[in-house]
Image (cartoon, rainbow, N blue to C red; front, side, top):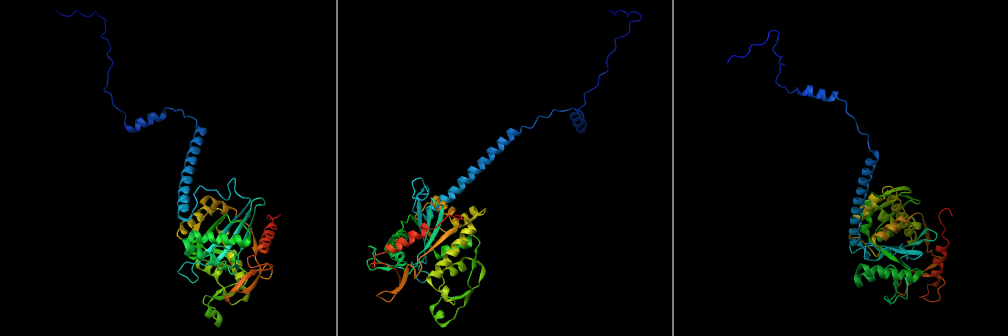
Length: 371
């Protein structure tokens, strides 16, 4: 059947022309997206600061944990006390703390296990003062039950060592020092010569002022013949570990005033002060870690790592207490012909009361810096 005819004037409906979709090119699409304005969120500074604080706190915690692991390992290597012990500066500790420092040589050197240096660090918490008492190694000792044959005070370490090792050596030395000075010894630190050298080298050496130039020798025959192959100049000295040990120990010198045991004690205290100055300040942590790495196998102590840190923090300016010959001590000769020092004013050989009173009076006279 034929389609009906379209009326005249009736136009065919307009059909919109369509084209296939084409994806815009990459550059065109990017320009299209950029052309559209985009709303920016305000920066949340509080959130960022809080996140930064959390990160810093986390790093600090990790650092403290790592430092404590190093400290605990050091404590296990050198101390007889638990790492968390606070015997010296805890809540129930004494008002005055006395710590014995002992320097000695092992069997690789002459005078094995004799105390070459004997010093007491005495800290008065009430006045916040620190004193160092130098004990002459020739001080004659009688009245110690463990040593009925009597001895010079530096022999206590050797007798204790051969009786029962390093711990007993230091304990017998502490008992002996307490006996002659009247001070209760609350802890001790012993260090051999190799450890001393390693400690000084670990902190990059020390500097000190030497008031008197002198030549020195190590062999008594050289001293007797006047041959002194080594020299310490007057003034500013920069010393490595071996040189610092020589400066502290030598007694065969060209200058008579530097040849006495008392002169050696003064030089030893000068070296201790130089070490203290070097490890204080902003480099204290790095130097402390270097020392901790150098001392195991050479140092031994009854103090925990916490007490050692507290002790080091209090070694500021120190007053020096000297047991002077002619003032409280006098020279004598023992029955075997040994040179020795004995207490002036004693009523009998075992009477150390005058020395007790002398030490107590000197410590009581120490005043705070600027006081």
